Length: 345
Ligand SMILES: [Zn+2]
Ligand SMILES: [Zn+2]
Image 1 (cartoon, helix red, strand yellow):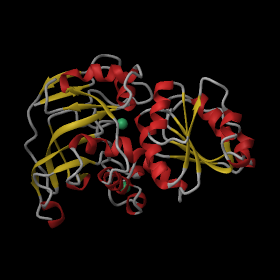
Image 2: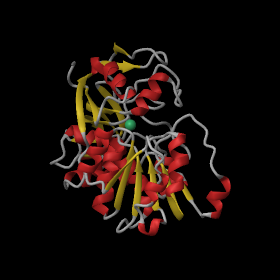
Image 3: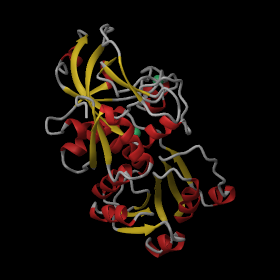
Image 4: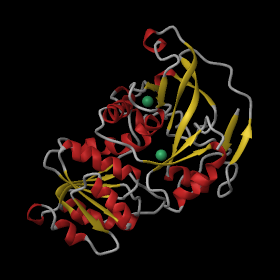
């Protein structure tokens, strides 16, 4: 079977031919991967910027596929044989205090995350624990299903921290696939949404998706953004999806006293935060790591009900993986790029 591998940071990924997996441990399944989304994390991995796993590594952490074989007698799993599934990428332990309370995204004994530090989905077949496989609703296509995790669940996990969204003022920093999903989730929940970014064509998409106002980050926008909130008191929450320290330091100044700063984007940079302002204004900071199984199931429901639509702008076969990574690196892709593992180009 074919797989894409990062052999050396900064070098093109290689497509190699290896044997298909044959052993399936108890409560595991063999999945034929069909589609996988490519995002900025794959760029970080390919270039070793901020993420430097042991190499070689098969990337791919936004996958969906078809269960072709399994080894189980558990009733709850038997019914997914032959079904289309989205793959939950974190190999959590299931027993620690975080796993037990539904926070398996920050499992204390995590064995790894697919495509991040263990081999992921840019290969034709993979053997995985059955509990990592979530069946797709019948009206959700396999490409949208692949993006339920990496595109919809990631912002959903952070947004949940806000609580009831009705009437809340939320500033979204960024105009990529995660921001576009965040806008749709926030609008569905009843929030007033302002989107900040530097590319006019992407800000226009934010407006089309329901953002109530937009902010151009090429300008000094702090007072302009605050003026959009009731009595200029500031936002209830800021969601940073851009992962730029400059933008974090600016946008945190748009928060209301007691406001919530949700960090989803990240980079290898250090943050030089205004220490006293954080304390004296009672600012809360939430580092929102990835998502839980519940987030993934809820995201599939949002997609299935038409409340959120992940934006797919390009599709490539596995042999074009380097083209896909370049497009993301250069910021040339408006929505998500899907790699179709079942197609060669
Ligand atoms: Zn991703
Ligand atoms: Zn755990």
